[in-house]
Image (cartoon, rainbow, N blue to C red; front, side, top):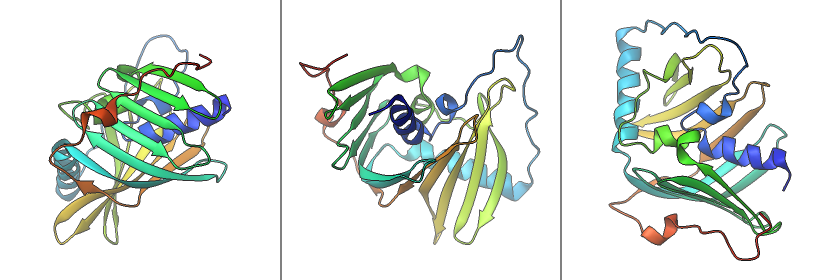
Length: 219
């Protein structure tokens, strides 16, 4: 797996929170993007989305990911908030990405490559945190109605951080569901993750969120 592919996997899967896919410019000082003023209906949508994500404590399902080159991959995902998520790619890639509460671990069995990133340095830290906020470090910049729900576009509030994430929520009979998310990085490259299925649960097996460095790994 190339370094580009690794970045695409991490960016796409972690895109729920936005930050790591947003590239920071090396500028002096930090200025902030002005928080938009939304109407009452759009404010209500932002509030509903935040409450929905906050209440999503345990879930699993299938996903399909499309990167900027048009390559499509798919697999299974599991989530246990706070702090834990697992993405298991189908063959032939068979890559595992697991957040265990402290780190995001990535294992590529074909290359015998193991990588580890502090969870706090990835966008997953926002989505997996105990308290989800879309009005502080990451802010909503656009709200768009769709035929079956709405989309929220968000970015880092700092002007020296580029890129954006768009999350699509479906509203069926008053029940909100996260449908997909798309990250556009500082180079304008997009990665979309479509949640084919989303099944909530009371809890999941703790073993799902354990990924130790395999013996014989190259790094």
